[in-house]
Image (cartoon, rainbow, N blue to C red; front, side, top):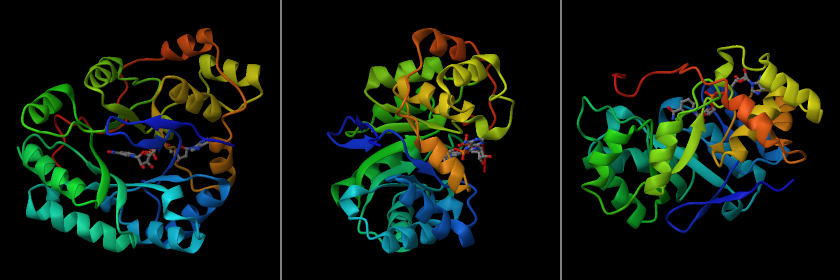
Length: 276
Ligand code: NAD
């Protein structure tokens, strides 16, 4: 099974399908990420605030997979926004992961109330220049946050990782990101299981037509729309199911039917208002 490589604006590529570890218990992370690597995932998405970077690092070390075959993302938490605090946060994440560099380092939330994301971005530009992060990007940024950041930066973020699933497909923000050359990454790609996505006829009918599961259909919807996606599951069976999505293709009509599930349904926090 070959996962397509998606080209980023800095000349690097990222596996378009990965594995996310939000809410994966730190005590179980090594086992779960080891399972994911055995299943075939090579792109892992973690964050300092998930508290499980040590487990991710142990699974990487135990796997014996060459570092250049792995794509590792982590994120700077809100309380670490600033210059020196960003440098320290990067070093601590690398230490926990047991890595010399990450492939992608993200500002986790804009926290516009703090008004420090541009300063923090300049620190990430230095972190990238030092080779500690090959690519740098943002998460949960809206167009006004990016407009402000871009007005005062040299490096354009490689990605923006945003909440994105059929009932909250973020079409205007995706269009904005594309116009700036910023790739879209989806978080909560399956709606975090918080609404009945899999029972919707647009999803269930496509699944029946292709002999696939609803989760596989939703992951294909992301992939065929050019979105980078990394669903999470603690179960090895579901990890394998979510990875086995390259044997069929949704038709334009099936994609359009799933597009029709848009209802502005946010399952997470609004970045304009989040103050955690
Ligand atoms: P998700 O949409 O991937 O949903 C995960 C849930 O879906 C699982 O807990 C499971 O209950 C269910 N599921 C998974 N596979 C299934 C299958 N095959 N069949 C049925 N149910 C299945 O949600 P997520 O974990 O929040 O998002 C994916 C990743 O995105 C995270 O792990 C994390 O890496 C990242 N993330 C980032 C942010 C951010 O602010 N940047 C926020 C949330 C998540």
